[in-house]
Amino acid sequence: MTQSQPVTRVVQILTEAGYRTCQAPLTVASVPFDFAALLIGSNRALDLVVVVDILTEQPEPRIRQKVEGLSRALDLVASRRPLTVVLVGPPPRAATLEALTKVSRVLTVGTPIGDGASELIKSSLAVLLPLQLPDATEIAMDPLATVRSETANVPEIEILSPLFDSALSGPEAVKQALRGIICEPLNRAREDDAS
Image (cartoon, rainbow, N blue to C red; front, side, top):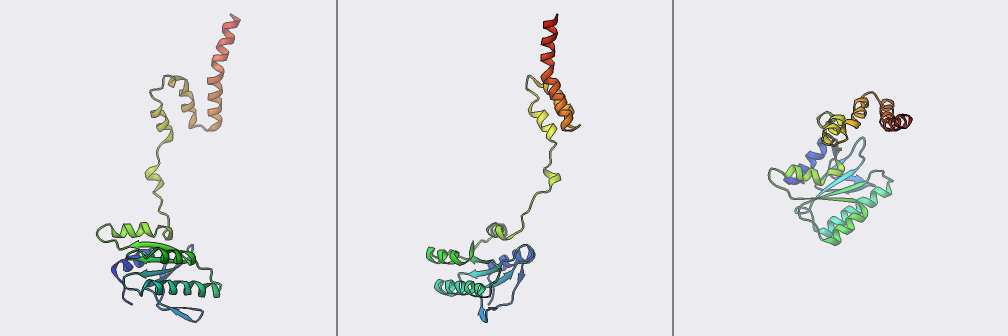
């Protein structure tokens, strides 16, 4: 079966994320299953990913029958692989979509074209892809500098200054500085009462 451009993009994105392509047809419990593309996750993701091209595949009832049959065959062999169906092309009717979601996880990609097509596909396949976290060094800010800048116009900044100065020395130093800030007015009041 030849792959359409959106199917090829889906396969490329998933293989770059560590999925392996399977030769079609896939045989489970002695029954062959043929789809636009088949991929198997490795390491953390054990998914069996079936890519269905709505435009080139058989009618929707046949797609539903094939996916339900594959799901039953996986159950029969006690497979631990969750079944994920990626639908490429126009969305199927609600009844078909509902039936597919009863036996598998369903992700709809649509038919994205143009410059942003790959990003749209990645967004649709996000649950299958590894989480991309930003580099901590790029987003890390000096929290103490942030607090100082946010409180620069606070009238009581002179009182809070010892807290900021002691923050780099650790929690015990901050506790001592806070104790000093709290006790200072009390000590002054005692001295005034004694005089």
